[in-house]
Image (cartoon, rainbow, N blue to C red; front, side):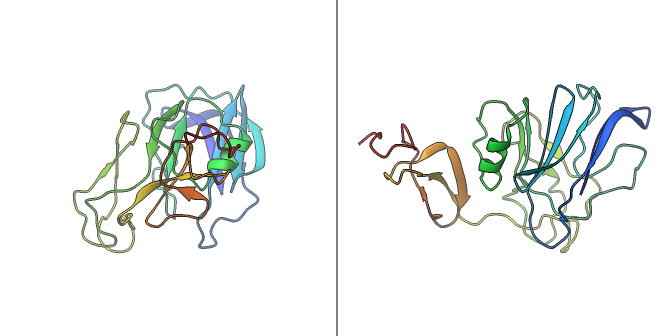
Amino acid sequence: LTFEIYNESGGGCANGTTLKSTTLVNDGNWHHVAVTRRNGVVRLFVDGVQEKMGTATADINTTYPLEIGKSVCNFDNFFLNGEIDEVRLWNYARGSSSIAAFKDAVVPASMTGLLAYYDFNNPNAASGQDNTGQTTLTDRTGNQNGILTNFALNGTNSNWIGNPEVTQTWYADADMDGYGDVNMTQIACAQPTGYVANSDDCNDNDGNINPA
């Protein structure tokens, strides 16, 4: 996996860096990838583990459109050959412990610092079917929806690949007192192990502290 962060200027790129993971992600399995930048230091995490670090002074406070799965550095036909899900953009550099803790979890759209959240769920699309016109990529924070560009939207490739069935939000119950943590969630059809349906816990590290 290669991650690039650069300034885009007139079709070219400058003041950036390229980080390459040591983990191979083209193995047919889902992988969680996170990138942070703080004080010019860029870190690449794969499946919750930091693998590479570099520096980049690129100013990313720009009006240039954010493109997911496409290089903007003079590679108009350079696209990701893979599947994407659960894309989140934050206004601060998440710590390694937070990245590891939330890599397999769905997060509330109201979380502090969450600027955009694209979960790639479209209730109006059918997996692998004719989804012509279903081009809206919903931002769950309500800040900025995206648009699918140059997708076939028909068949098993270049299309919506699936949507949840009847699901609900489940909350982690680390202290097993029957009350869940509102900040640690999963969305699933069936109750995951260690999760409950309510989010009323006052302190999920102490089973004696709860609303009961």
